[in-house]
Figure 1 (tube, helix red, strand yellow):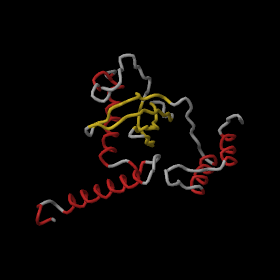
Figure 2 (spheres, one colour):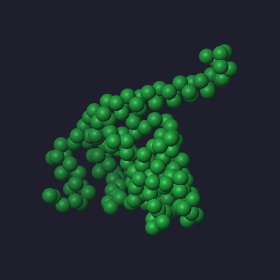
Figure 3 (cartoon, one colour):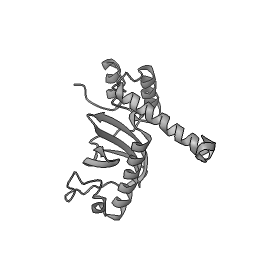
Length: 184
């Protein structure tokens, strides 16, 4: 292929890697996986990252109205978010009937972690926001032994065929107690 196309080996390796990731993502979607980053193709990942970067920049300059292309499906004239994004740490995705819900964890200017979510669809290789970024009502940050317990549980009960961890109710009750939630 190198001789036929004239492209460098590294460019060809990168292209093959991208194709493999796209095939893997589409396979996971066809298998019914709905909750994991494994279902995101490299192109959608880039689209999400560009949106998050643009959203952060326009928040800082108070020019969200310039993001009309992303928000063409939603009227944002009354949308006034109060996010103070310093750095996006990570995101997770849920997929339901071609509607993606993204949960974003970020640090604010005070180095505290916060999170928000938004929903979108993909049209003509473009992200179209259906619900603008909205802060989560509750955001938990586990440190030390509590975090270790959660990671142990996630390893003990790996994702099922849809990408969801099936942790038993007894184990969830322990987690709720650690987080200070009341028993139902």
